[in-house]
Length: 148
Image 1 (cartoon, rainbow, N blue to C red):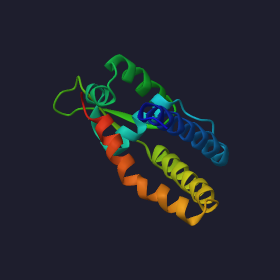
Image 2 (cartoon, rainbow, N blue to C red):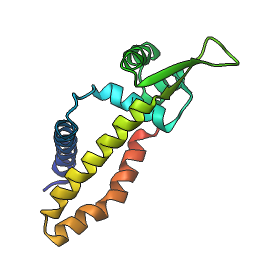
Image 3 (cartoon, one colour):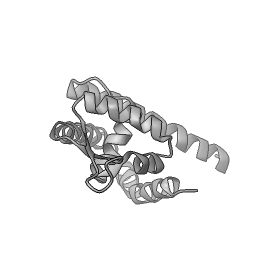
Image 4 (cartoon, helix red, strand yellow):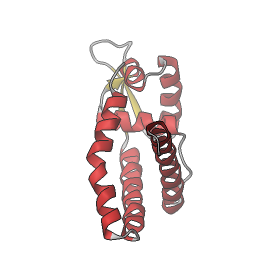
């Protein structure tokens, strides 16, 4: 397969895996799926408690008003808390709620179980090859995450 085709196929497979895993995991957790943008924001806030809306927008490479809308929806759902910065009251600091942490942990458990089940159906060499590529995919994600 030519290099360009392999790269296109990688993108398609990663997208397909993401969609299939997300759908199957949400079915297993018996919850309705949150929109990807809300999930991205929750993961960011979980990894960076106290992040501001403006900082979150920069990290997500989106407009602050878009993040504000996501925050409003997640606050309404009880998944994000918004606190005023004690130094600059114009700035809102974001934190995930215990309900969000429980939801994310439950999701991770079910996703891991699904992947474990699927990987166990591969022959040992294929399973090892998939596991060996994980550090390289981590590096690829870091490159894509880096500001351009």
